[in-house]
Length: 222
Image (cartoon, rainbow, N blue to C red):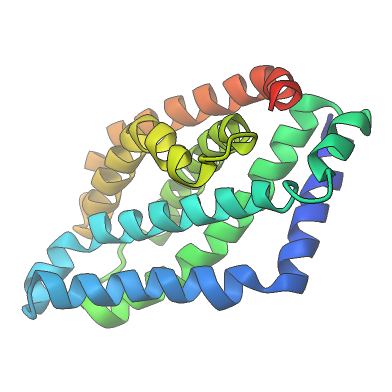
């Protein structure tokens, strides 16, 4: 399983490195979302600083949708998905590999967005280690849920519009917990973030476990 996961993750990351879609399209889109929020909410930097955690995670969520759609769109042409099914790879390994590739792209994006939040919104980043933990847990949950629902929508003609409808309600708890934990950490109240981090951990474990068990059959049906 782990060997197959490394193979699949390496394949997806090499494709992204060569195409540079994440660098040339997804990252500018996410930064533009932050800029538009800055103009739309209020020119008062105090207001922006208070809303920064929520705006940050909304930008990450939008980018995650693009990353998931891109991950499965790569295999929609030339029967690549059929080749993946017939390659004899472990379903759980394929799931972990694709989720890991998406998660790594999102983590790199979050680094850029974090700099953008500091520059555009004037936020002070306290508790960097807890912020990193929050990002890792949230990103793992988003990537795992996105990979599961990405394969569900992959074989349908309306996958571009169906994926957000399927995924957004599922990841709402992750988005809420990540936002609340980030708010508490940035405000210097790290102890208030502990319950939200536990919620993030629980949902991440659920999404990953479900993906490991269900991705193989879902891939066969897609």
